[in-house]
Image 1 (cartoon, chains in turn purple, orange):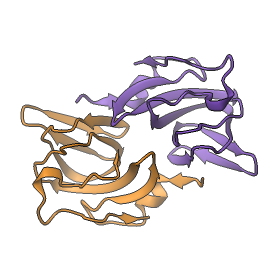
Image 2 (cartoon, chains in turn green, orange):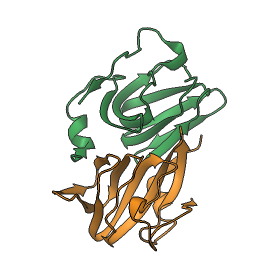
Image 3 (cartoon, chains in turn brown, orange):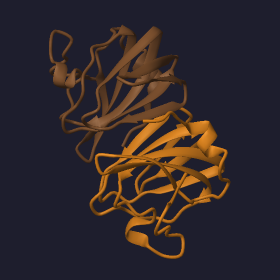
Image 4 (tube, one colour):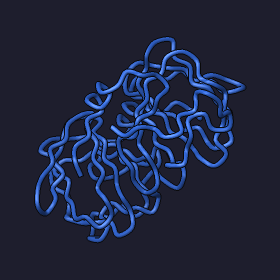
Length: 119
Length: 119
């Protein structure tokens, strides 16, 4: 039951595509992630995923359209929907998703973070 | 899968202590609420609750201590823990919590919002 400040937490790491757990509740996790460049196309079989832009902006690409997101914007990607986040410049995002959610979902591969760190 | 902007959503209502649902995922809801003044002491039997300050600041009071929260701060109140949010001035908060969560929890009473609106 402590105060968790997003900017303070974000100052603790600089790695990209490397989600960090900052809180947990009801089997869900709150993570912070810094992204830059293109991620892999993937979907999550069983998990809906929420992205809230904390700093910067990025584009969420779907197979049929793209959605541009800036600070203060959120988007929910339902389970089963293929998506790919792309950021032209560094962007910091808050994720809210089940504790079981793996960053690369269906795609797997070497960008998978099996055990996100806690900060 | 649309962009949801927090400031835009907040501009759609001015009522206090009247949570509005802005997104839903994995049986959880994302709500926005504007608060001012003191709420009722209560706890939630089965739900942990996350508060993220979007604008302004407030104090989360527990029976044994108080935690001051400002923009960009979040706090998780675990199930069973009595709490009371108090805001000296208007404060806008994002809530993440199970869809079953009632604002007044164990306390009930006339400040209960049985069916939060969707915006």
